[in-house]
Length: 552
Image (cartoon, rainbow, N blue to C red; front, side):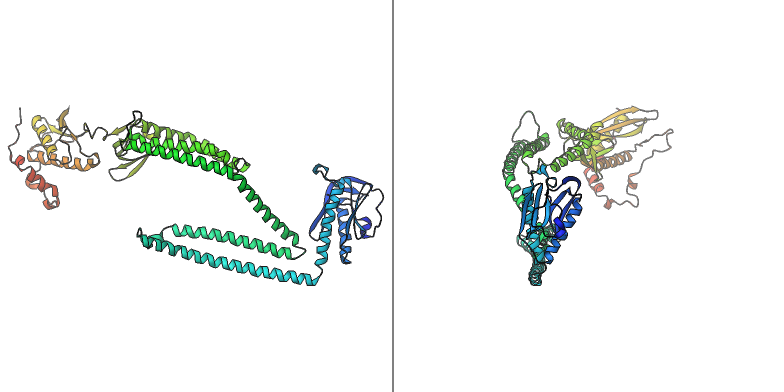
């Protein structure tokens, strides 16, 4: 698409020029007249480069416009090129080196297109010199601006009214249903989200109004008309591209919808089946009720992953470079974090399917003791006796020794030990009887299996006795052991038996016991210790009984 140098630099040329010597040039220049590109020059003609030829052609066209000459624009072929004339005056010469043959262009086709563009540019240049036409264009542009401003004002008013109406409708709906208080709705994020959605829509409408108004105004004036045409062309091309893209994506989206519905149906079947296993309605041999929930989540996740893999080729834009780049980016992130992640996941599977822990079990993991509240894929949460929630990574849980007090505690019973050391001068049968009696007085201990007393060590100065009891609830361990220790001290004081913990070397002159009349020494008060009166009433017969024998 090229034009040659102005023939005679704007002088009349009624006859075709002689054979033109043209050669390719390493440079190019575009002939632009009245803000419209006409043609690109690439050849050197008669020693004049593309830039010089373009400048001469533009001067010739400006001279024609000065004389209100707009055409006709014609092309006259001659040996070695084509001459473009305006009202018989030569303006541009096209030569074969000006044409980009790789695009399939010819001198004749480029000349015809250039003639049409030049004719349009000349007419607009002459129109721009007419005051009446400019006044009409200015009036239309002013009206378009006024309408655009009015539309923006209307969008703003509508935006405010809709936002206010949304809040009012939400409050009225909640008030009618009675599900929550109006103040709760105002404090929630729902109205803010709704207002944000309305704001986004209003911004989009404002941008469309502004874009359309600017395009209309630019098309009213000859000089800016190319810009307005390009804006309109861009808008139409974009709308056409989007429309065709949506139409082309409909079959793929339909397949994605079918795959989604199938995956959702299968996931629901899996959920119903495993829920029945958790409730005990089904008892398959290969799965236990406590592993039904994690297995359901695992199978459901696999179903959705498989559905995404199958639906991926049908997603709009899945074959574009941008989509592939995003896929590679996420794949890289997963690869970099997969080592630690997979370690935690596999540890979670090991904990779940080995049935090492269950939600609600009272366990000890390292230095942490409490109730298991959550068994996750990556971590396990334990609520301690101090109401602390401790998160333990599954890999750490697998690497440590875990003690479960609840697994056999509901059936066989789990013994909890507590020890005292008593001197050799106290009969061991009396100590065993006192420890069993303390266990009988303590609430929260199971009667089956019965408490057991063992002599676990014969030390240098005392005997170590260990009382093994079964708790009814492991979660109440501190409270139950506190009551048990209180009963042990009361009984040993009552029967004059000295507890030698932690150790002693020389026997004291008198037993180190607390008389019963000093059990509630200030600031202690029997009224403030609710369990003491009940304990005395419950065990009054035992208290009045004679001391057990000190020897067999």
